Image 1 (tube, protein in one colour):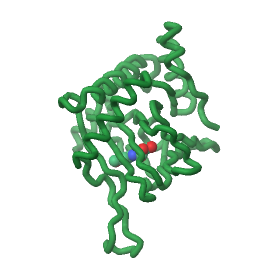
Image 2 (cartoon, protein in one colour):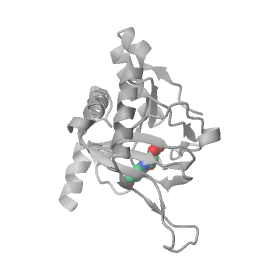
Image 3 (cartoon, helix red, strand yellow):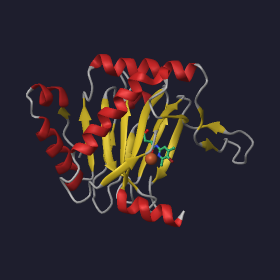
Image 4 (cartoon, protein in one colour):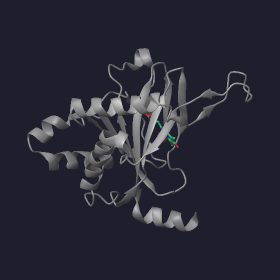
Length: 230
Ligand SMILES: Cc1cc(NC(=O)CCC(=O)O)nc(C)c1Br
Ligand SMILES: [Fe+3]
């Protein structure tokens, strides 16, 4: 069953900010997954979407995952997701920078609320676009090898998305549970989940342009150990 959704607008308007962080902590502890709808204002979300479309149209995205062509061999590589990394400080990424700091405040706000939230840093933001030619992302674990990544944080930007028509559903298979979480990549939706083996996930083929911004947060201990072994 899908986790219930909470309107952060309602929560912040009611000044129940702390309960939002408690809500996130509880869902991360219980299911290892948390969905927050209406994470930012409609206007902020639209500005982020415009920035990403502009960057995409400038050709700044590069092939993220190459998918084998129909011929099985390397004959025809169908581009999978196209990606671009940014730390949100460039002049054409101001709204994306705002998103990253809002993600930081949420994740760091949960610091110390549960033993799992011992976050010491994060990656840059990865802007992803599935061009909508039926490309997908096969089932995988983000961090199968203790590379330090603890939380995957994804912000979706897709207006009027309907996975029945457009595909592109994110399905998470929480380890050891007999449920799956079907997450529609809806506009202004924030998704958090543990990056390790607890959350294998896949993206079904997308038939419309599908945008997302992903940041991975590091666990300090795991990251420091990973750095030594790297
Ligand atoms: C580059 C890269 C992308 C992703 N993205 C997703 O799993 C899709 C999530 C979504 O868009 O719903 N995961 C990994 C482990 C790497 Br690496
Ligand atoms: Fe992933």
